[in-house]
Length: 109
Image 1 (cartoon, one colour):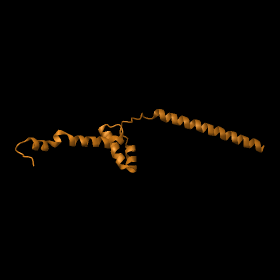
Image 2 (cartoon, helix red, strand yellow):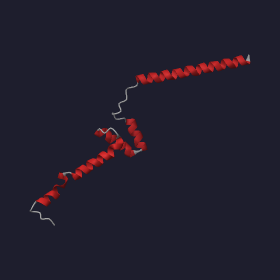
Image 3 (cartoon, rainbow, N blue to C red):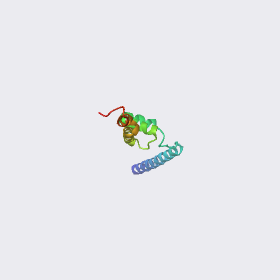
Image 4 (tube, rainbow, N blue to C red):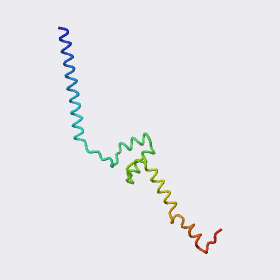
């Protein structure tokens, strides 16, 4: 009788665990089907605030990437460096130097 009771309890426990795992799988499937589709190009406040706490510079890169339409936030610094370099190397940035070289009123020193 003791063995029968132990076997019955074991069988019942196994059935209960199997039913619980099926229930968990169905609940997860329902959540996946009812969840809104994730737009990876959209700004995600949770990701931003998580980054603010963990890595503030990466949080700013995440924000700038969204603002400027850059797909990878880790590339933001290189974009800013490129913009800065192009700004200093442009012909209009050295307009005063060009004027001084080519204008006779301003003799070269």
